[in-house]
Image: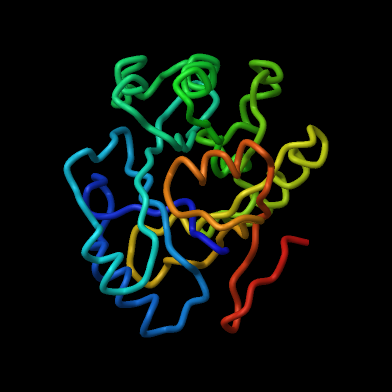
Amino acid sequence: MILDLHSHSTVSDDGRAKVENYCQWIKRKEIPIDGFVLTEHRLYDDASDYRSLEDQFGLLILKASEVETEYGHVLVFGVTQELQAAFNFSQINLSLATVLEESERCGGIAVPCHPGRPRVGMCAHIGTRGEVEGVRTIETLNGGSRGNENEQAASLAARKGYARIGGSDSHIVSHIGRCATRLHAEVRDMNELVASLKEGGCEAVKLEDRAWIPES
């Protein structure tokens, strides 16, 4: 099963894509993904319900969040009311240790994203702030990365033995599915996605010519 685990809709302050338009684009362009996760910036979207779009387009649409810590941006999967009460998702200087610990305590998982990106990626901060305990998975393929940013992330994953995910980091419709995650088990909801990520049952993939290509 292949999911794009990092995308943004108009719910994010810089997102320009409507969720329905993502679905239409995926089907029109025959992008080989089974669904996507909306990781809105600095919030969790409690209000939106995408079940009718799931039924209409045959796609899995899940919701998560992208928060900001002193080590860079982090995707949080498995957001619950308890987790939302544990820290303020809207802050831009959260403690990564807190995000990791509280996500785990509340049954979720926190995944540092685009680690190789300057300023907002984990690699840029390890040298000055030190190594991070508690990370088990990072995003090593990001569709918005430039230069050798994804290579830096892959090197970090290899050095630390982290599991790897991929996501498009799409903010506009045509970017959805540029990178994605191949899951080793079928996922039907967020609980099953979190379980798969915690087990390391995932790999980052690029999507080219309607086929998935494992990360090199």
